[in-house]
Image (tube, protein in one colour):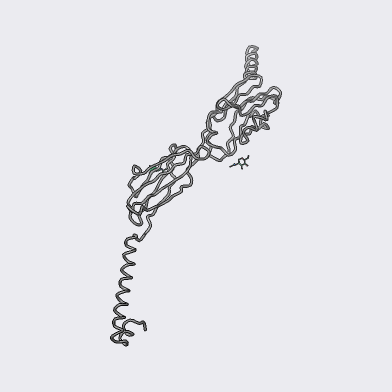
Length: 267
Ligand SMILES: *[C@@H]1O[C@H](CO)[C@@H](O)[C@H](O)[C@H]1NC(C)=O
Ligand SMILES: *[C@@H]1O[C@H](CO)[C@@H](O)[C@H](O)[C@H]1NC(C)=O
């Protein structure tokens, strides 16, 4: 009996003294522009003794949070205004790092290191995704070859594949894609398809996210149009007919005025 009690006592004593940091979640995914709160927890016991607590957060060898003896390092805190350590949650045994307006550069491996009697640390990873939400589209006709030039452009992260389709036909191999790094490390993706097309034909460009396979789509309908050559042809024909008609009327005028009034003038 005594041996059992001693064993329980020893076991509890061990639990109280072994210090370890735990993470409810190791991997976070955040959308560009959203907020995220990453959590490390530690055992506080009865009541948190701030003077015995040390909290560090770092990423890529840079300190993000330094909280020692109940005080946060203000210089580090002010160096990134989008980051906030929620100090008021520490008494619950939670060290929370809140990031507002998440950017691509926030992605990476974060480490929380907590000292409270003992010391321990854990890694947390953050990935950031910016969906290709809005596609800018342009359509142009080459006046010489009368080929169409269809262009789709959008911004997001990570890199997206662009697919072009006409009905069931995949035209992607004919398209030219350019990638550039745009604002805030987002990819600026522009894809241009040059193709012969007839009026009312429908084309789609699809921006496909690599991990989910989700697509953002834009549609092109080739407009009805009068070819410049046809247009001038019709115009020339109309003018020609007009001239002939006038010529005939005026010629008749010399002959018989009454007839002309019958034939040429509106009644
Ligand atoms: C993100 O957090 C900021 C500040 O805490 C808040 O003003 C904003 O509304 C939050 N945005 C979202 C999308 O929750
Ligand atoms: C996105 O488009 C690609 C290419 O056409 C297709 O293979 C894929 O199934 C589409 N994904 C979804 C979720 O519809």
